Image 1 (tube, rainbow, N blue to C red):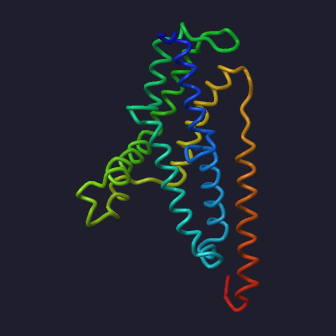
Image 2 (cartoon, helix red, strand yellow; image 1 turned 90 degrees about the horizontal axis):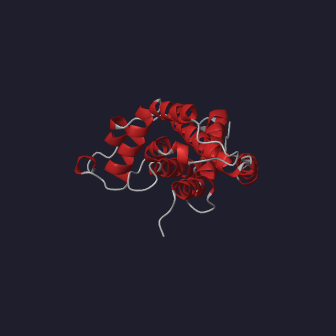
Image 3 (cartoon, one colour; image 1 turned 90 degrees about the vertical axis):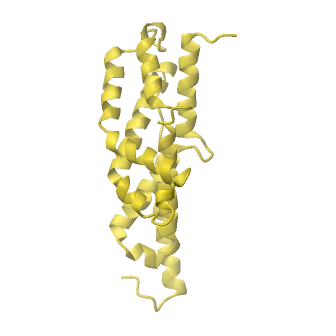
Length: 215
């Protein structure tokens, strides 16, 4: 049975919701908050954080790559591409209604396009790293893999800003479709958990290695 335009819209919004809130490896909000919380700890502690627990360096690097790969899914033209979704909304906005029974707002959709355009350099680097290095390593990076980071530069702040823009875009469609409000209690929980984790690691390091200089 052929889906109506409204059904296609709702299915796509739910798909993005799963990408944001999923409890498996695809949950961007949880991973992003964990990443942000560890970045904050590194800014607070500096490289002293690696003295408390050297494995935290590798954990943060792995988490960063995971966040990048999840963000890249939002621009995968064979699946989640957020630009295709917004174009679909624009083309069919009079056939799509929110819980309020109002059609999609043209100005809102335009503002979401502008928001995405402002992150184009970051998007290009994330997709470039995924396509050229993480998913299928190109020959040019076999001998000098570090070059991918200069060829596709990214800053932590730009990555977080892009992620928050995507969360905001999807959230507006989720709230409009359901008529409810969004909750980010998971993010708050993770921030507290990371703080407790680092404090406990530091206390354990001081107890088990009393002669180690952690300052």
